[in-house]
Length: 402
Image 1 (cartoon, helix red, strand yellow):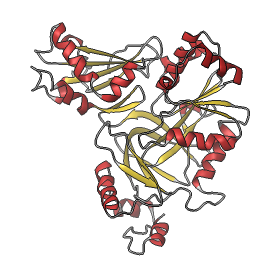
Image 2 (spheres, one colour):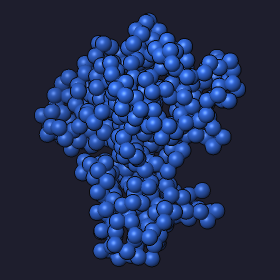
Image 3 (cartoon, helix red, strand yellow):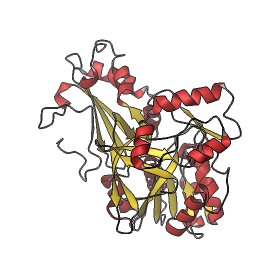
């Protein structure tokens, strides 16, 4: 990787390493602000040219501009070819009829990227995107049935929305594959989906805007572990369970020992390879309805309610549970003496609902938003009040914090 950077730029200051210990000494851990500094410098100097430019969503902080040239060296063993071949051998077949439910636009990559790797597989591609882009009535879903739709690719929220819409349209589809990314497909949501499509299997694509798709989980991978593209990504597991990624593809903005924001464990297999087992977020952000939202963003909205201006970060609790029809239930609890009465809770609901991603997800039925005062605060056995509690990984829709 370092050799590639030096070949492109003789002034490159990246250092060669001789061992993992040497790597850790020479390269400190990095976070989003480190990437932002490099990104802004390249952007201001006109260096983001002849590349594919993407951006993070901006939900958790200001958007971060990233760029890649993954087709710069198109050899038989380059990253996009290896990724494509793995999908052909383990996920999709030429007989599949696939609906692409990722959202297009917004400097994103998943929607357009999925269409690009699905087409050469040789199957039938339905580039649907957002369901609200057409009237998802009986006629459209009958077309999907007649085409033989058997696979969906999208976020768990967009897949659940599609499943609900097919029920409302009264059209039975024989869906066998769900390929998802963006967040976990929680057990209760899987159970609800299997009540609709009993023969369905789940495939997970794991990655991030900063570096692309890093790993793939298939039904044959036990304990929901993921195959890692180890030729192109190096993952490290921190003491607190946080994951660090080094992007060996050589993107324009070097990603070295970058805290990706997820937690997980690296599992050594008998054949010497390593697989990834994901464990959720490692920061105070949370996935909901397909969007990544920062706890601090919710706190800022709460402080915008008259009487709650002085609320502390630790007195705003986000509780996530599973809904009966595949939706996420997002409850915002404020531990403040003023957070009482229907009028204030309604104003609190309006403020949190003003977060663009939450408003969109509530509008399309992917999220149900609730607000509550001190009586609903969850305190753990150790008398702690976590900022984010996620019960969605449990089979029940509610549980007890540990």
